[in-house]
Length: 465
Image (tube, rainbow, N blue to C red; front, side, top):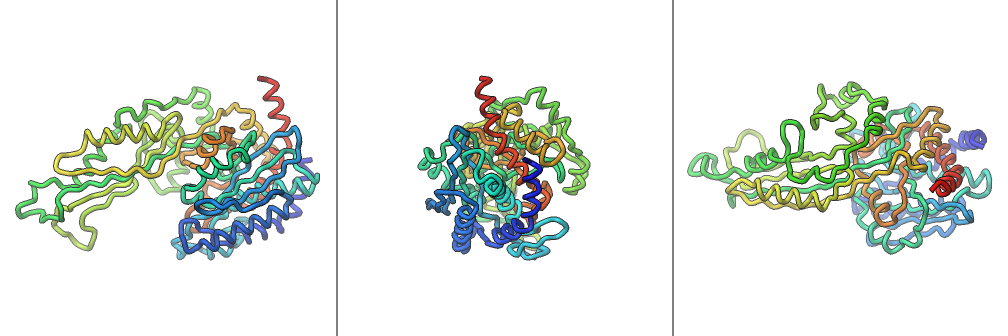
């Protein structure tokens, strides 16, 4: 069966690529209000495409923000139901001048399809849709029941999705959720992501005198400088060993098992290659942990930006009236953003220097997500990758956050399986974003294999309980 599917995918590859180009050419940028018509156009594109493939109950569901595209096929009695998630919105393309070809005029170069959204998430979303189309064409039906949820706000944090999931919870009832929106460990190394870090972002505003003051005269040495105060406050949050010094920050962190530790050590990861790729001479981080542990299984606190005082040419001798910093924390199981927020507030209250006022604004937040590497649906994903790519798949974590994953898991309570086909060098969110056409083809085949074997694996799992 897999050989036949592989041949059919190869025969239709050119047709599928042209359709993907049409999808990418729509500038569905959710962050810019001027692209609302493009958002709607992209949603309509998907509506028409799902109907052509063979899905039923296809509809545009309006939310308080951008519309959600829904469709289903529920004619496999006794078989499991899969909820497949994707998103059709994309990041802004700026800076345009750094693109080698127009971001919304998709172009193929050396086996790569360039365009904004090519990897995140239109190319990967299309791999999902085409896997179902191939199965429809081959057998006239699907081996499992399928529900599709494709939203248009992922790139702005999915602000409408929580209320949508609550309202349509019964309609989205399923056995498993599958998402293709992650990257592989390397170009030819298929990888299943089984854990994501959570996120907590906040801004610190430090205010001193009512206006900027002369740094000499009657003020220099007598008035607290907000920038000095901010630097002192930030420095109190981490020590020279890379450890976060906020009381309670590590309290709920679940250590990884020795088995997982050895699994991470066995991965084909090379620090030197990472350093060369990003242009640094040395890596750093929390003492006592490997690089992969630092970026995947340990929480972090990073200063993302600082501003305050004079920024123009030359020197202006002032004590600035205020200073600001943006900070984000990556969280790991079982850290709760609300608990960490309380710890941070208490730390800042205790360590605020005299002579300034500090205001904290908490913004982005999402919970971490993890599933056992022994879960039968994770093991099946590894087998499907192996059969499609011809090499064993790696089990990896991700250092980043995908807020929709924890939204779906916490509200629907079904296991989320992350089957991504992006390249680690695909430039997602950056100029010259691209998607490997080899991964497009193999991704379709991988997903076909997964759908074909899903029912039997779930049945075996239930019988073994």
